[in-house]
Length: 221
Image (tube, rainbow, N blue to C red):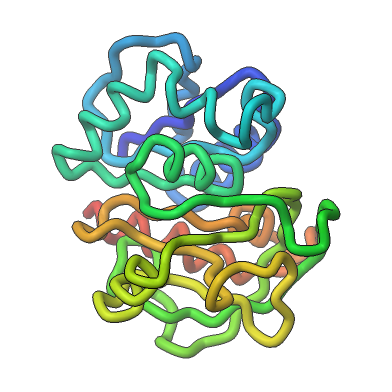
């Protein structure tokens, strides 16, 4: 599997996800700076968490217009798997690779804790190793994780099976319909606010994220 992690000014989870990919796949991803205008042939592109461009304007808004995103869009349109975690999810919505938007948490406070998630869809490159309805634990750390979309778009996401994860029990940010992660209609672009890369070692508090990356590797074999 040939993968790449896009590094923006202000990214702070790029190393976390690179470590997770290398540990589970055995191959380190390429770290690609946001100013690059070309990408090599890739199987997986990851937009990591953090505070790209200092979250100026809106979280992910400036990252969505960085030079490398033209190539990310081109690869996504060609069917390459693209994953956005936290700030990466925000950038994917700002780049219109995923619908809706991520806005301020309902409580207007930064939240950082472990949360329970329901696996809604296992028909994705990242969730095939889970069971539908399975409850998993991932950590969150965000101030703008409140997913919103108009009623028609929310209905389409539900009807087309494009909600991948929902918050279970406690909704930490007010996200519409408890949505924690979604995919595009083709299924190759996925964004989620919780951090699976921080749930791969018992010393960190849990290992439910291992199956997330194992699923991605198996999907590319």
